[in-house]
Image (cartoon, rainbow, N blue to C red; front, side, top):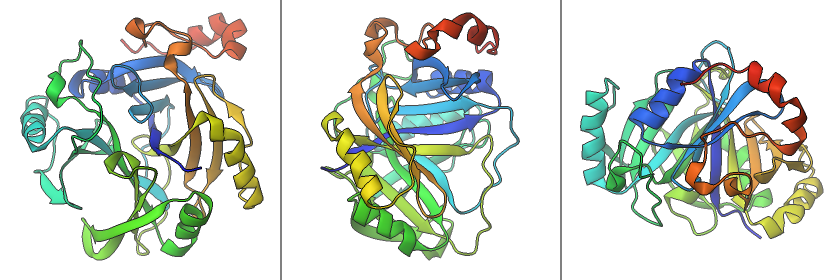
Length: 314
């Protein structure tokens, strides 16, 4: 039983209309699920991914009217998105300039060519050249198929001390220490790389040790949680493992498109284990994913009330 990689990452937006325009327009991702936060139905929950909404491709957002994130440690600091190769990054550098998005020059980091940027609310993103694995391009994207975002890459955490997080990652979650590299903003600090499943960019968690930073305060432009992929057949066993290890957790939560377990690592960063199935096609035709508001079955009796309270996004 092992985790297979990154399942999705969920961040926070206070400007959901701009968010929708940026990720479907500038970034060329497909809106694969148009729904609401199941625990706060006043808020949109938008899922952007590849054409199929493949597990591991989804960058999702909660729509909350909150102040901007205060950056610091004890937080998820950067989300990587995988593209094919260095030629794709050349295309993206020009495309982002044309769109008025500031991006840093591409650099080699941890053995991969990487281009850093921020979305309109300061969400820290990186495009990383990694052509491994299947590609599911979206035919209606404004980005050419060969340059589209393939899925999520490494997720970077910031923690003040490694040992407590390391113990959870290795002993409970079964992640493997792989290597280290200097922290880009401060070469005196170290980033520790952990692998899941087959390894590679889609199955890595990077942990920067930054004891000099103040704790972050979550907000718009920041990340809410990261989810790791688990086989459907292993879901019950993961629930048992968390309990046996004494890790406080949510217990089993059915999100309808996948099943989840939520818990915090020792610095308070929210983690999720999520199953690959049943997937976004369980309640929508794959050809029209994301085109209508879909609700989990237990929310359907409240559809009129919920939809009336949502902001327009288009």
